[in-house]
Image (cartoon, rainbow, N blue to C red; front, side):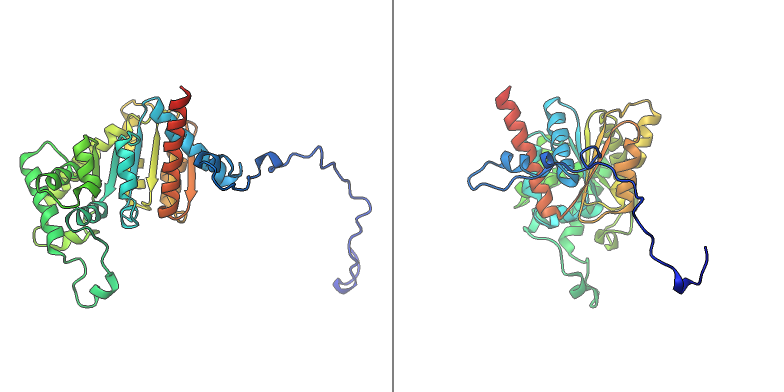
Length: 325
């Protein structure tokens, strides 16, 4: 190299070796392109018309995995935070219960709170900013008293976990909106609901009726029940819907437990659905449990849009396969 930096000449390209576009491997082909929507078309046609590229392709993989598991009577297990309840997905989730899509549901503590408020009052999700300054955030009396009452009774009698205890109490008390409650519907249908509590994270932990022993015992019972459900996920599907920390951590521990006890999770498919990527969901749901043995799928988008699309596609595929059979 000679000369000063200001004297350098641009590199000449005359000797550059070229290759043929026809021979080159390419990631995108016209066969993978999407098709424009035609008015009056079917929903199945809309799904098949999506591009076969990136998330659209993975969306179809998730649909096929869930529908295939239902058809072959393998487990589809749903773990979720409270946000799907808060954006109005209970009717769609309940429809999934009634159609036999989901064999079980795992919630964090906030999920119970919002589901109970829907069942009792037909509304939920307070304005935190408006209530925090005056010390009234999280102080709804009925919410805490109902949940703690159900927990105390179940703790005393034994034999059930947190999710079942609250669901049964909603039915027994004739909650006016029980038909829109995940917990009540699951209790009616005999679908296990497990609740996984981190003490101090939920508004009901601030109330005088809070019994740490009861909540802890019921939540641990539910963790053991969740492990039983996870033990059946070989060639099944686990969906993590809107839980960034609690459920991904619980799921990873359950995976370790069941493999330690000799259960196979070969062929498992995991699907993480959220509106942004989170570390724990990515590694604890999508990557680690499926490494070398299954398939992990990430679908990013707003729950109130993506989950109804997923469920509609699953229901449509199951119906189509039933008619073909």
